[in-house]
Length: 491
Image 1 (cartoon, rainbow, N blue to C red):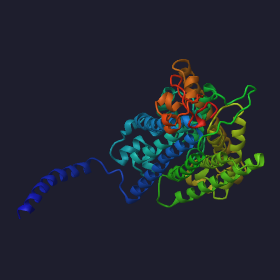
Image 2 (image 1 turned 180 degrees about the vertical axis):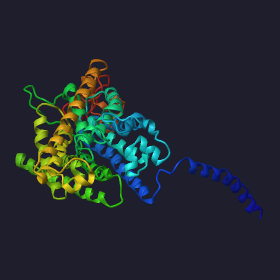
Image 3 (image 1 turned 90 degrees about the horizontal axis):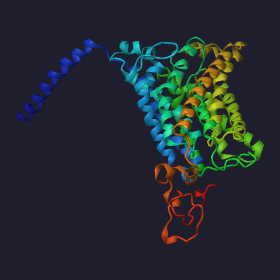
Image 4 (image 1 turned 90 degrees about the vertical axis):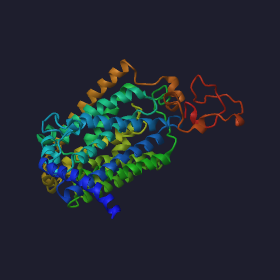
């Protein structure tokens, strides 16, 4: 009896406090998720967002694999900072600029995710929340991971020579203002989506072209890595140190894309997302086969890096049309992207040093994917999504293709001008590139004070032969016996 009283007494006190509170809360606001369907949809969006977040690991492994061993560790710091900066900036103002309100140019509600406690209140600030009956927090997190992916693309193209401080400053501006405003125009009820009817289901332009354009602006000012071009201007290969890491990174990205595109349905009820999964996978597979085939025709080799870029190009290209095209169109879109990425990488390399091929795989493939909506969008899915019109294949009209081309041009032009201006200001002030000595030593030791693979670079005295050669260590560090030849400038 005493034991029951000891339990019942505190329980009664807690109940007396909680029940009135619940009743008061019920009068104040209706719960945001009122139905099981809404809760299921929110759960699917969070799962999809987590898959997209995992793409950061894919970018990390891909970029580290394409780096030389002396720069392998630098990618870890940049990816972690990339994700962290975007997390805070997008929560503070990026989400509001992208999806707050229904203005044509910029959102103005929802800063710090302050959207009220009911679906009605949230819908006034973030119209998408009420349309899709989805938790504001789930929607914000899903859109944030898109922003983080776009920002990661910028870093990948600038491997092995960009200053960490310059990247951080650009990351803040990109995730807080630049990406959100452009995504509002195309994703969030802005003028390109509503007035022009531009179709971009999951971000061939919004995520991939925007990121690649920022990277392109940086590369023009950053310049090539030391030793990339011969005296007569011909490009030289600077191989990455680990193709297995590249392959693992590509597969992780491929997996993450099953959150990227299908998650953009913003719901699980009805199974529409499953169709998008299949469309996405077909395009990626076709991209690999096409890229490998083209490289075989050109070099009689099955190029590992190009196979990976073929997968990414196919995925990037299908991102915009994934919610607008039927199954049969997906392999065509992916295969054309696979051809584009190979020819793009080979051509761009003659002028710009892009170690991972981001400007081709994300930029050129992103343009093609966006334009492909204007060709292959089906009447059924144009009506279902309530954005734009059927493509040229079905309608015989160039109207939708024109809308897509306009959107691509606007996005590229705006992002390029702003990004170039930001990097130019940084170049004239704090600088955007490490010194030649730091680049020769590798960013691992020069910027982060440690090696990604320390046993390859730190000499072991008991095994030292006393030989002197360019070890890739900082100038202040005495040269030691070589442990791995990849530590030289030529590596």
